[in-house]
Image 1 (cartoon, rainbow, N blue to C red):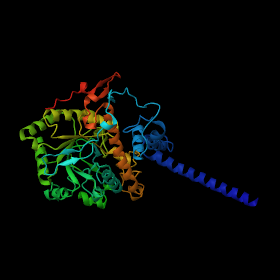
Image 2 (image 1 turned 180 degrees about the horizontal axis):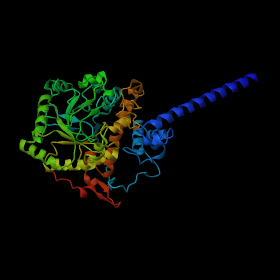
Image 3 (image 1 turned 90 degrees about the vertical axis):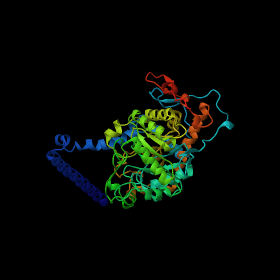
Length: 494
């Protein structure tokens, strides 16, 4: 009995101590909040006002897991993310009891199933497509769906390793992003597209100018199949790349040519490219030096200025044309960017892609210039729509981030990514196990391709690149739908 009483007295003392500490802390916070002048809420409602900031920080978490419906979240909703998760795990993506998608939202694509689709023995896999027929080493790209640009620096070492190995297993290419080529991009043995950003990381001299010697060094690596000049991207059109200094480790600094801890800020454009003729000069110079196909990536504000590009190509001849054009949507991407640029600048991909395809075809470049679509295309329906619109290839960054385990925590630019994908904190990177994640990357890519082929067969063609705008309907404002080729007729090909 005595021991029990002593224990109760001890617990009571602890309780009183904790109450006292909490009261003392509340008094300290009260004094601090009343004296500070930066926050009116805390000044008028000391202590209690602090909960507003706490709940604001936790709001993203609660909305994602408890309050938002499956199709409500932005930039990607739960239904989209769950499809990727099931595909990565090799699980069935069949559902029951009907679609949860609201088919009355304007712009929603509805694919037109054929009355008499091909039989099982009439299906065909997508054949490789040649890019850069005038380069010394053309590239026969195997896959319609590939990994878009994500720099080593923006994403972590294990993330790059998993993407490299997964891309190799699935037979898709991996774009380096503008941060240069790291050993981890090559580790898996996949095909690599080297992206040249405005800062020219990895292929610049000491003055920051393009170095032909370093271009040759990169081109000599057998895995590097193409070079992509980044003019602009959807996350921040009109502004260069932003890599916060806290993410610039010794390894990243060596690859990029920066100091440890130095912000990696790219210029808003290539300083030697002031016009379309100069853009073609740069493309042809890199192609001549490297012998590899060369194209460019751009977020489009209007189709009108790009007429001049194709007119210049007509003057010089098709051999001087870019080998491919990557059209990025203005909906934002994986990179850190000012909110006004991410929200308000740049044409959405659903409009930009069609305009660039039409320009290419109008000027007779259909078989010369390949079009790559990039921007919020993570599910089979997105990819199938892009191919119907005229894209030859589709690339995705955030889709492959989901395959690595991304939970859309929206902390990519803070070096605190809880899944280890966009952080260089070794403790957080520990959670990303390359041996597991690369399998998920490969399964995601193959699942997307397989289901795009399924959509193609449903609309009555043998393989995806035979799909046309007439095979998809788009929902209008009044809820009715119309064939895409009626809204945006395809340019007749010669």
